[in-house]
Length: 226
Image (cartoon, rainbow, N blue to C red; front, top):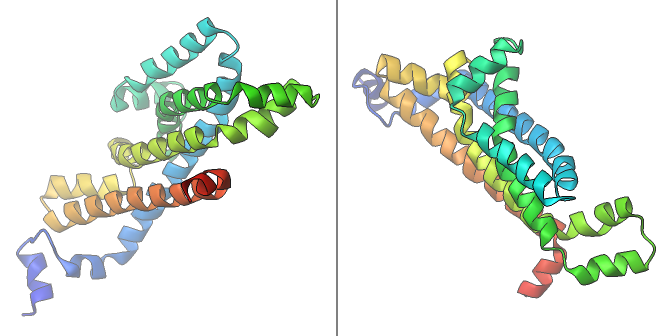
């Protein structure tokens, strides 16, 4: 009996045999985890940017939008999924994507609004002096200067979403969470640990990639650091 074979029989937490014999299952779960994460954060960004631009026009509107997103963030995952199912999203991964996109809004809105508020007034005045329209000033000057705060928000939202995807296992679409729940129910230690470690690694890899993206989008920051 080999050591690799015995680790499954001993129900060891660290078991290379589990990884080698279940590669397809792990890759499928990882692919679902990545898809749900990307889809949820992408939807969150697409909603948060225009919402932040609209909300910053008046203080009461900003407080209302941020407050609503914060309240939504406090709703328990099970209740959120139940509400979305009641609204007809269906028992599929779209329900998880929409729910996690809603959760991401609280993080994204705050960072986008913070980034826009930190744009130097001199830059805005210069854009106005050049005759830029308000819309062009936003897209050509304010949003680019707010990129560090925006990407920081995306990084936080992405890491948070990677963790929250596992909760989607409650309705059968949780990526690595499916394996974690299955492993817990069957007391399959290797499955629980492997899926957990892969979830953490995925969060770290995505955070690192977004950090590199931020550096590429803000060459002026690299210049100051040098």
